[in-house]
Length: 197
Image 1 (cartoon, rainbow, N blue to C red):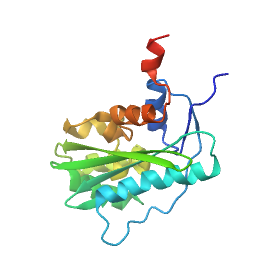
Image 2 (image 1 turned 135 degrees about the vertical axis):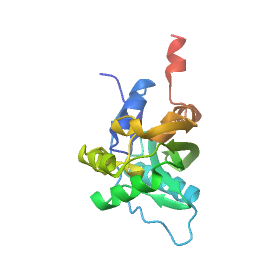
Image 3 (image 1 turned 90 degrees about the vertical axis):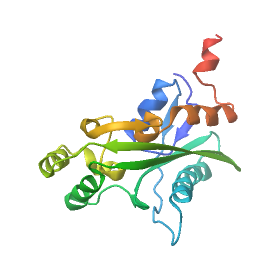
Image 4 (image 1 turned 60 degrees about the vertical axis):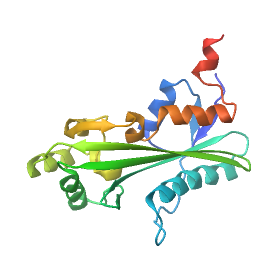
């Protein structure tokens, strides 16, 4: 059995899939932290703090491997849209995003012992016009419940997207380019190393 290279401080199936796609071996150990926004905290500072806090929490328990934490937020009109708490909030989110452009910010942090490095990636996503009926039907798929902003581009929610400026991985929750750079900083073997074998 191959030895895991890192610990993933997340329960996101999307992040798991991306790591597998780039050949990273990992074990999952989701971090449960307080995700409240601090008074006056800027969105970019918040998302970076969340990614680092998740990684640090697990790294404090398991010091033998690098720990990767990540966090994604949807931002529109200066407002952070997290995971919808219920149907009504999800429908409000989709209505707010309909026929407009919003930002998606994803931060990735890697921690090992006292060393912590993090990056921030940003994408701009434009939705087509979405009817109330579509928003209701989308909620009923179950997909919006655990997604920032109440949608996911890799599933049914992809039909709402007119345009993306930036990386798809940023919107899904793990920007590939930036994540690989972090892994290499921590001497974690990536697919590039395997090409030399």
